Length: 138
Image 1: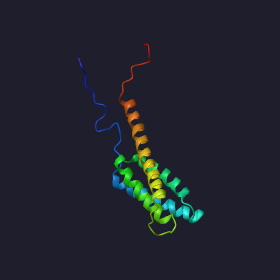
Image 2: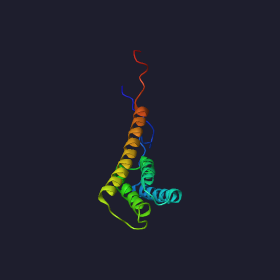
Image 3: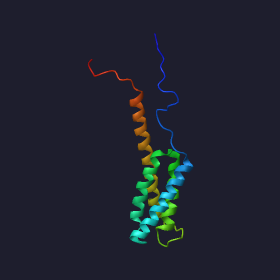
Image 4: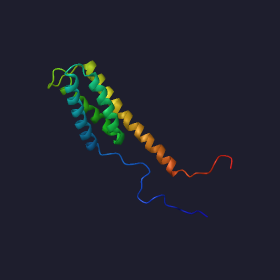
């Protein structure tokens, strides 16, 4: 005889990701705060430290986001980096080699954060839902 059991009513094994607009708002606000802080700390020099800090922040914010939010997150952070951390400050500029590299770095960070979080959540859900059969050989 088969006995049906509910796992938990209304409980999803994998949490829902945050809304894309929320992810973009948080990442833009965090990027702006980081760039302003770095401008006060090290001046308006080479924005490599800004890019590294933004990449880490984008990866952290993207852990709760959908993968579809990654391109927009990277673009928003690149715009803030370009306007507020790259000389001339306050102007949107385009240098293909540098800007494509920065965009790629931010996109990779956002995608990596999202994919790692989804894998961790899926693994935890698998462990919660898989019945324990006892020690091997018993």
